[in-house]
Image (cartoon, rainbow over all chains, first blue to last red; front, side, top):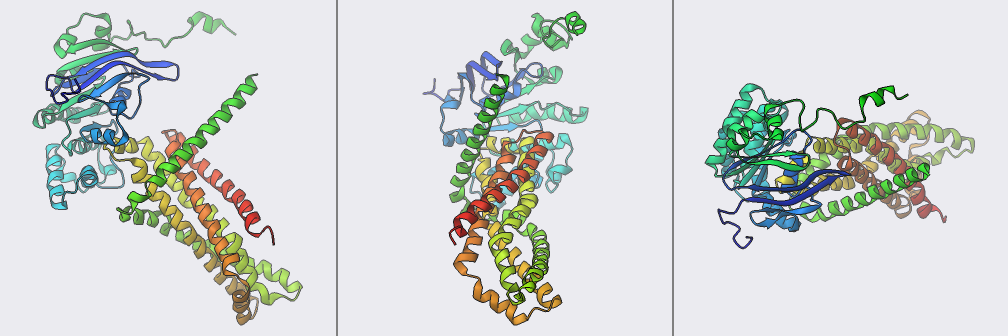
Length: 272
Length: 259
């Protein structure tokens, strides 16, 4: 498989037998996921299922305790620092907070990866940055500082930065959380548009069921460290599995219990 | 038994932190070469770490010099040795108070700012964001700050001492009537370049190294929450102050102990 890294039938990201622990708690316990090229793949699950951790594992910021993650045929965790950085230049990541550098303007934030990694003259950098800002509707906000942006604008600016190096894939960490309906609508439109226009592969990590099923081609639902369902989004949306139904329909109790594990209420109250 | 286990945990935790601190230091030092290509990064940091600390250093230096002259005059005049006031003021400043007080002020002014800045960058995922943009945050963000601390500290200490000598002159000569010529000539004759000035510079270099290292490590290693950043900032000031005072004793013993 690694001999044909650009084989278009091969999934861009291939996760096999992934195990990851935080202390004693297993965040992932044997997870297999394929992210097909050119698609928008959603990773969904309740809070605390390690969705952000998964993105950090794919980006090589965290190391799994077992299992492998291949991106474009390369085993992420066997690369040298130099090779890993080279691979990261082909991945964009949109953090939940935007993670813009707060001491420089929006323009400089978007230009940052270009200035760091290319020797392009300023005139070209300016054009590229303005094009990316135009795509997210923030060309007019280029001179603002990140602190002057609203949450939705910061996320859009971060999106422009994530795609400025024309990566092959982009990872969105909870893109819809805490957005007002208008910004949400803008993001729902932008993600597929960018994916199509730049021929990207997108991974969207989210627990916003409605929005995510609308834009995703594939969905994986995670719970308790395992993939409980995976497949084309329509199939998942119509799934009859109790687990999937509880999550998709937002039922308070079910296979994922409402209560955090504890001893029975009676013993707890009557004790002492 | 429980107590013993707790003690063990604290010991292991401390050792781990020390290890992480040294790994960070090596990583920062490895970035020095890359810095020569981007001098602008360094200049910006020297401005925020060094230049912006100048006011507090100048004012403190002035007052410390003035107090030294007052106290010195009181004791020296009892032996009829007021003429040596200049030597006393200059030697105290160059050997001890310059590096030490500058180190303490530097930790409070620049060190705490560095910790808070790096800690907040961590809490807001800016450092993580840089990593994902294939930019090494340690080399790009921490190394220039470290270098700036190393360069700024001896210069600030020199400024402190110089202003202190002027403050001493103002009180000693201007107010208490010590002879102007004696103040300067005694100082010129008795202050030794190697013995006094170089040793003072070495001290300030060491304090600059340690304070900046502590500040950057605390910021980089903090728990990325508002409480974590606030604790780390406090730790920076406390650890730096203790480190400066302890190291001052060790260095003084090494430099002047045999005389």
